Amino acid sequence: RVTGAMTLPQYLSDLADALENRDGATVAELVSFKHPHSRSANFMRIQMRDLERYCTEELESPFDDVVAAHVRAVQAVADNNFNEAFACQCALVQSFLKAFQSQKDENWALPILLGLSLDLRQLAVNADKQCDSSRAGEMMEKAADVLMSCFRVCVTDTRSSVGNTKRWGTLYIVNQLFKIYFKIKALHLCKPLIRAIEGSPLLDQFNISELVTYRYFTGCKAMFDGDFKLASTHLTFAFERCHRHSRKNKHLILAYLIPVRMLLGGLPSLELLQKYQLDCYASVAKAMRSGNIKELDVAIREQERFFVAHGIYLLLEKLKIIAYRNLFKNVFLMLGTHQLPLQAFTDALNYSDGSEEIPVEEVQCIIANLIDKNYIKGYISHGHQKLVVSKKDPFPQCNSI
Image 1: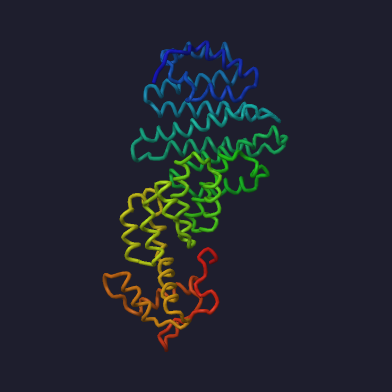
Image 2 (image 1 turned 90 degrees about the vertical axis):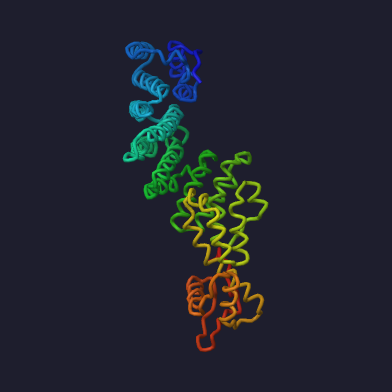
């Protein structure tokens, strides 16, 4: 909504005062798209020559160029021209970065850089929506290049004291980069950033909300890499430390933590699923408990749209081996012996599948696979057509494998 409240001279005066007082938080607010001036009708009518003259008179370099570019970006957004707005934002971030880098043993301007970085990414997302499909992700890639320049300036400030180092900005910028890399499906680019953050002496001292975001992304990356234990550790941290009133964020974290926990043998309670509106996992968990492969297939297919949208459909296919393990453990518990006829597993599978009869050879392959992956401790006695399982912990906990 456009308002007519703030004039350009008033805005520049407020900026000049904040810069003179080295009040980074106030400057960051004034050059943000969240500030009311970005919806002011007065700003939409400013001519370019007047804008540059006003900025030069009121502000020192490079902030005259930074603010002029910001107002042009505001006007471009008002005209729904996000490509132009993004170009202006790139220019102003690069102008600001030169001055920021030259400031030694001080970081009062860090909030400005972080605010500009956020707006840069958000403008890139909107600019990409206005590009044709052949250029999909191009603006976000450009934004990532600029953000990497910001990251390098922050991470290389190793000589400043802890209180004044620019390294306090590294995690926030890394999170902005993660959001881009996940969006454009370039997760391999996260690896050097993770290495830099994990090696930072400030790791445990960063803002908790930034750490929660970071652990959410590193957890998701570990999940896609197949490291489910690491994924569980990071996503559990993110869920437990996420603000209790941030239901939307907790829902998003759980959407990935639940399948990771399932792959490690843990099943969610119905109460948890209902609390965070993740009932799509209820039928999956039910099928997993009983080891019913047919029910599991149906449950996954029924919620296919949700699972595909979150990029975890193929991951859930891996649950089948856990379901087999659970089914065969139930057979073991029912028979109460360590020498189990293969026919018992065949009957159990045929009963749970219910579609077509599974040959004993296929059952042997499934059991051999479970043994190979350490889900069962034992061996197949082909001569006696039996599975002989260990007397000690024949079906190890999935999270211990």
